[in-house]
Picture 1 (cartoon, rainbow, N blue to C red):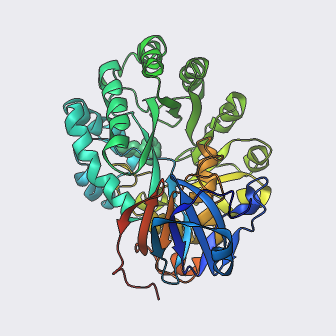
Picture 2 (cartoon, rainbow, N blue to C red; picture 1 turned 180 degrees about the vertical axis):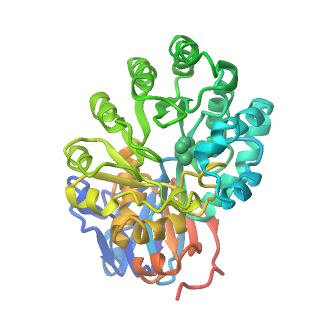
Length: 427
Ligand code: NIG
């Protein structure tokens, strides 16, 4: 496309050390993955041009009132896509940490009625409006780490009324702040207390009422299930996910987190979008995942939070050719942290990804997990202009200077939504 046939740019990002476009992953873009001394132009919320700054003047016409954003020799990357969070909830689980530090396990706390069911009690007792207000600061912290899209699960309601309340709150949050929200139904997160000795009846409620009502909302894209000791067995999760799939929600699975119990077979059978966690993944499942379209989602903040000595095998999955994504898993029980920078660094330290792989997993890999890779996750012409300017000279700096937000600016759909020109340069 020539300069004259492109629309006038209303936002131009210049003076970047590198622009990470992931162009080789986008059919027909003709771009390399990274452009040194790059620049980027946006019109009407979409990227219209990416290339070397030396070509900017010949390729782009700026609108008279265009915003010129100086990247100050930092990195420009796609915005982080947090494809696994449980950030809508009420109450605290701070007291569980002391018990955990005294040696009590997550599963044993859950078996005594704490864990997920503690958050269920608090969330049920909280109004939809209050849930929205409680979640806003969490989203604001995620934005401060460069997140521009977040998937958010229900799963702390576990009744028709409370699951729908959570899902509506998730949807409303997308309109209240810059991060786009993607809703996932997770009625198969735990057996609620009133069904503790009637789990079949809870599953009946899920398939006959909760799943169909959630589908009727029209905006719930995924249905997730927790296959784990004390949560759901494979065949129970299958019932819920098959019903959800029949009603248009794509299955996802919390799989092989604490114990290994066949969740990968189910995910492959159902053609699930993702399997998430994977600390207990069997090595024989790695080539099976690699041969599928199922994305393996790494959640290293949970590995850290639970002090799990095992590591999800990110390196082996990547080398086998599996689809890999990375997320925070922000939730009150296993990852009470919005620190996407720490997740990025831990993907390198714990899961063996190189810095550029960790970035890809947190952007384009996550977009693929959500089925949105033709719109977000890369910075190529036609993509949504969701991007971050990092005050860092290289990706290696981001995984080295661990757990600190080096975010200078965040752009969402072409609009500057966070501007911290005074953030110190990472060094
Ligand atoms: O992804 N593992 C299950 N669900 C969450 C934890 C939820 C909680 O403990 O509140 C997770 O880690």
